[in-house]
Structure formats: C-alpha cells, structure tokens
Length: 258
Image (cartoon, rainbow, N blue to C red):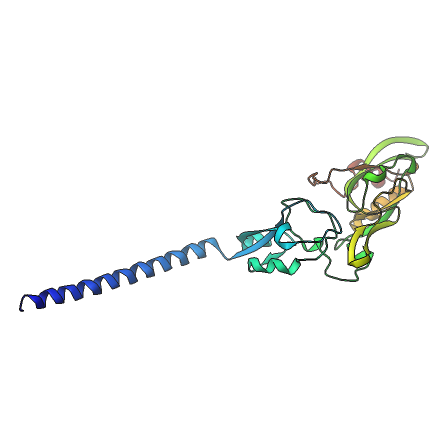
C-alpha cells in the first residue's frame, strides 16, 4: 500500500501539469492571434460586381455581388465604395436598381445606386459636377451606339479672325447624361432606364463637367465652327489624367485672347 501512494501522487501531478500545459498553449495562441490582428488592422468588407451590368438592372445581391475582405484603411482609400461591417450587410442593396453602368470586377459605389425612390433626373449629376448641353453635328452622330452613361470625346473645328485653326480633340472621356434630351429616367415599376436607347438622330447631348471646365467650354463655343463631333469610348477604357479637361492647345487659345 505504501508503494501506491507515490504513484497516485505522481499521477495527480501529471494531470495538473497537462492541464497547465493546455492553458499555456491556449493563452499563447490567443496572444498570437491578437498580435496578428493588430498587425493586420481592422477588417471590413467591400463588394465587387460579379458580371457586367447596365443602368436599370436590378441587383440580386447574392448572385451579382462578390464580397471581398480588406483592411479598413485600404477600403477607405478606395473612394466612395460601399463598406460593410459584415458580409451579411450585402442584403442592404438587394433588389435595388443601378443608375449607371458597372463592369465585372468593379467596386460597388454609392453612385451606382439611387436610394431615392422619386429621384429627379438631376440626381444623376455627380457631386460637384454640372450638366452642360452641347450641339452635335446631326449629320455625323454615332447613332444608336451612344447611350446615357457612355463616355465620349468631343471634336471641334475653330475659327478666329477668319483663320481656320483645324480639328481639335477638345475634351476626352466626358460622361454623357442625356442624348437628344433623353437620359436616365424612372420607367413604370420604378425601374431606371436609358430612355434615349435606340435614337439614331439627335442635335444635342448633355455631358457632365466640372464647373471650371464648363466655363472654358462655353468660352470656346463662340469660336466653334459648326457643332461638335463625338467619338464614343469603349466602356472598359481606363481614365486618363486629361479626362474631362479642355485640351491644352485650346486653353492657350483662350488665354491668348485670339
């Protein structure tokens, strides 16, 4: 019996040691996870389009939007994107309609969706931008290929003092808000639609510009020979630094006062 007591005592100490070992490992893992989380930063979720979509398309949040986890500081640097605290918040945009085109892989922006049920047409103008109607050569319009929310280059010929100054690419990559006076509007059932779709002939388009570029373009109109000609851009064309700005040679033309 005397030999059994040390064995029992050793067995008890072994069990205590095992328990302490498990506790130490658990605490160590918790600390490691905490350190990694602090190094990684707070995480949030953003949404990317899973397919190409157009104005008026209704979102199926489960099928049309992919959830992507990213660091909060990185998400805030992406611009006006939808940032979610949990993946389940994706359902907030379910069944809503798009107000503009979206390409597969593009982030879901606040501007993609109108939260107003009775939004006016002017709600399509970007924050800090203005809508400007310009004359276009009706004999040389791109026809049905041009729709609201497309991007175009403006081409024009200018004369000053009887001197012909040739053809210029006046502004590149401006967003079209309306074609022939028809833009994105609310169709029956609340569905936003590009009502100008299918127009073959028109004499004006409405474009989106900064207030500064709008002043420059209006100053140029007095020297425009005829009307503008349009070049329609592929929707996948990447923005250039000069997009939406009057070309440098024409800026010089205005500054020279000639």
